Amino acid sequence: QFNKMATVCRKILVEPGDSFLDIGCGWGTLSRHAAKYWGAKATGITLSKEGKKWCEMKNKLEKVEDKVDIVFGDYRELPQKGVGKFKRIASIEMAEHVGLENFQQYLSIVSELLDDEGVFLMQVSGLRKGSNWEDTAWGLFMSKYIFPGADASTPCNWYVLELEKAGFEVQSVETIGRHYSHTMRTWYTNWVSNQEAMKAKYPAFLCNLWHIFLGWSVVASGYGSATCYQFVAHKNTYTFPRDAFISADGIKDTPFNMPKDKKDAFPE
Image 1 (cartoon, helix red, strand yellow):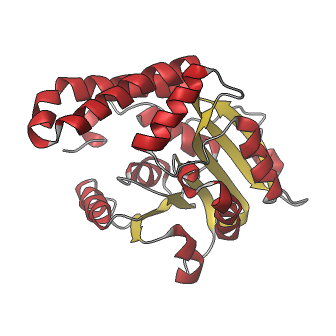
Image 2 (cartoon, rainbow, N blue to C red; image 1 turned 90 degrees about the horizontal axis):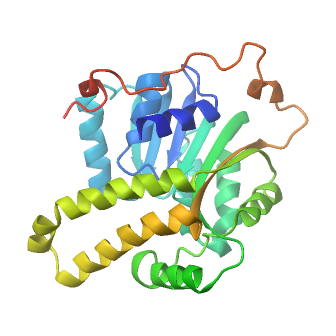
């Protein structure tokens, strides 16, 4: 996970002092990482009041309160909040939840918030182009029980078209489904190792459902029924500095490995 966050920051060219926005920041981990290891001035936005409180507790614990701001609210309201433009924007596993009908609105808000020389990374869960009965069963299960309404989980070409329709140039696409499969295997292992405690707290149906979801996710993302994509994009203008993505000196040194003392990254 540390290396994944480093990959995101590297792909969008985060530099010390850059304004950084994480749309749908969850527990704020990426925002803290960008601030702590890359020197960004980070903002995360979440729809969870409890999540905001937890993020602020972590900001204090990791001593980044002055570098990370957590906003409670809807990302669509950000332009009216006077937050200005951001040089780097990331949206990790959030975009598929806005829905097919709202996708252009979502990208238009990103474009409005993105600096003209800024870079945007969108990571989304995707599906295989075409399907067989296994892929169909997976999609129906997810739609009914896990992520109802998250219909903007599609094959890769649809996302590329939507980005281009919204005025973006796609700089790169990476399929990270196998990475996701290994991540899900860790989640599944953690779940199984704690399932007795979960059964004592939650209904049996919910526990069984989560067991199936996590286990099936390992398999589905492992052999391509489902996958994840990372799209790196910027505004498709004549003046965008495209040489920013290439360098005669190669990739500069970046904080790409977990610190030897893990307490530095995870104080708790």
